[in-house]
Length: 181
Image (cartoon, rainbow, N blue to C red; front, top):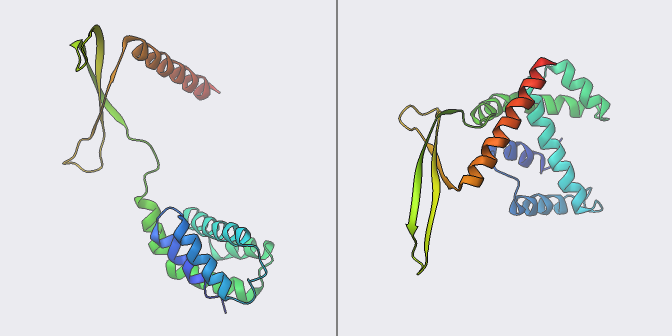
């Protein structure tokens, strides 16, 4: 039989929330109630929880089969009963975790258009005047929701715009070199 906090690990995987302090407190309380875990350092319990969560999510991510998962767990010194219990829980929660992982974005938004305009600021809310040009840059990005087209807008000076352009050129050259290898 699995310890009482094991269900908590599966629930944490399904919750898809960042690991926060209150979750650790709940885990430590559950571990403190278990006589076998009382002599174990709390930081080690936290690391074990993070490792178990990572293992479960990676297994789902790579669609691990029974043989591969069993081999991995045996390498981690799991006995047959624990491996069987882990596999049962894995199968029970796999579909929910796949749905969860599928809903998490894997890449940054795709920029579809860039517009810019010169923005000349003559005065501010201060007493002195600026008389310096700035640029308003608007990046249009793809959205999975057809009704929503989020934009990213920012103001920058000529120097900042030149710096951004230089960094984009460096990134393009780096990608070109990488693709030629």
